[in-house]
Length: 211
Image 1 (cartoon, rainbow, N blue to C red):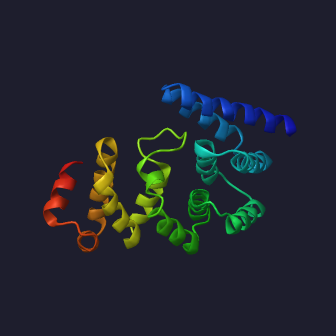
Image 2 (image 1 turned 120 degrees about the horizontal axis):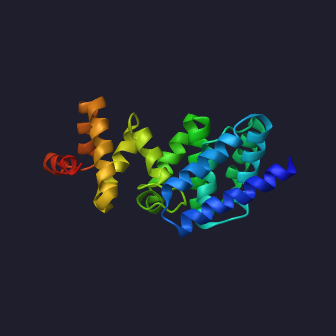
């Protein structure tokens, strides 16, 4: 089992290095998919989750953020989740605390962590507007999660409207597409939240046309 942990660690670091040094995104995605598939059963999945969390504790910056993003997509034991909750309660760095909230909201789906993630997003706009992880995506994984909650949560949707002021290029196109999908779900709610966010109908029409 120790050999498997070392092997995964080696391959994981290779994948991260490829993301840093190359633009061959298809190879990166295939490599990460292979790693997840290989370690997705039984004890291997448990060891993988533990290893990635330990990796997050030993690293900083984009490597730490990336570890939390990967960890949120894996099966984890209740024991590890309890440990992460405990570590979260004592974490003082607001950005790292935000990473914890992302993981706990996505992995546990507990309302308390979803609410904390949405609330903290307002103070972590840089993590949302820029993809500061090694995860290959046009937008940040943190934005993706916020947009998911915006489907039904007014606070999350209001924040996305506010993000529009600082959005441009490909990011703005993604935001416009997400807003269009949210509007179709409940047009009245959409318009009400837009009004609360100070978005005029004229600005809203321009924004939706940019999709």
